[in-house]
Length: 56
Image 1 (tube, rainbow, N blue to C red):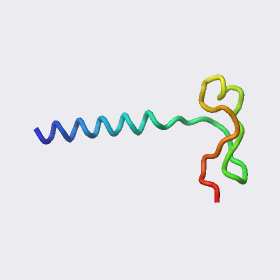
Image 2 (image 1 turned 60 degrees about the vertical axis):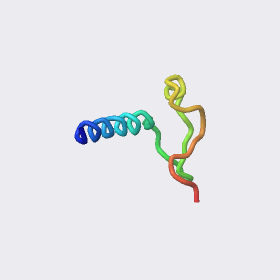
Image 3 (image 1 turned 90 degrees about the vertical axis):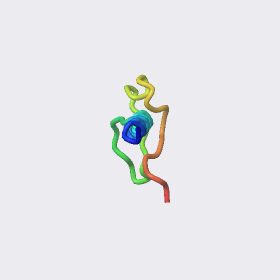
């Protein structure tokens, strides 16, 4: 029973983590962000300028 619950937990966590990450292309500027390409906007990956790293 414990193995079954552990397996279910691993599957749920894996799906949750993988669905919250969406990668897209684009280099970062000195502020750690960039403007989205037209192709990324069409795919719904982003809408404009955004950051990937925390600003300091």
